[in-house]
Length: 460
Image (cartoon, rainbow, N blue to C red; front, side, top):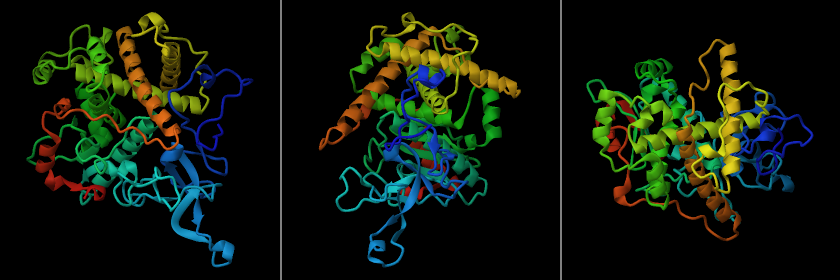
């Protein structure tokens, strides 16, 4: 798939054979990236393995692009080769914006994201505001990393950052606000990756007022699989954790302080229910017997906040996987269905102007997951998508889709208006933060984990 100069996919060929890309309009952008030599490259790549061209993730392009050393003008005057050290432009655009490598490129995090290197005369919006010095946006929202004096922690940190960069890249593509604590010390986003300290409390994954805490041990495949089996979960991944916890963050920003709140309560329930009491009840008595008919997971049945976060994570899974399938022209139109397709009667608002498009997206997802499950079975692996979407959950997914698309449309409209600054992200009142999944505030965890963590340089 070819990309236009703005990094987006070319329009499908109307004469091409039908495939998922021609049947479905994805929510975001292409996930297929190419080097200047034409070879496919991927989200993690910092160099093309075929031609050795440097690569980097550029937020302006919403993807990985080939890079070229920036020229400082000396070449035109015959003074040297004209290359500006450690500064790049997008390949083929020598007069365009300039970038530098993130300071974490050569660390265990192996970050391939680029940092703006603004010059006089650049658009004022092209700047490093809100970033830690030398670090990209993704690394700037990491506040605490595992103690790297422990040899195994470097690999855990790498896996955590890879999953987080996938998350952040999708949030940016969806037009959702990603604001670091360098830009907003009170409501900005921060990640603490904490490890267990012998004799200390167990590290709980959770969210508290914009701080997302993840147990670094979950980056170890064997540990995560053991927990998945013990919890009788069909699916447990690092990316799933990130998507769930960021759902709590966006509930605080996009739902609680907005007119969406009443509709949220009508669909998900009243979030003012005692969280501690229902948490205890969930773990003592388990989910209600009919949870599978109403929720995307058993955990979602515990409390409206968790229903939102689980459904939000599911929506992000669907959107990113569909975008990726479309980007590579995966054909899912001839699959034999294991379940019926959904209809407008299953939607939350069937009369909504975007209802038909959402329904196409949803049913495209059903087709795609049947193909993916067959591929997994052909390799002797468990189903790629071990879920059956209940019809009640479809309305909740449409609600989330509407919240996301409204936010994206607002962001895109503001960005397209010359001279008009982007609107600030919604700020909830101080009392609006949802309790974290963990019952221990993130700050308390940080204070008790000092022997098995270190402050990330971007937050020092």
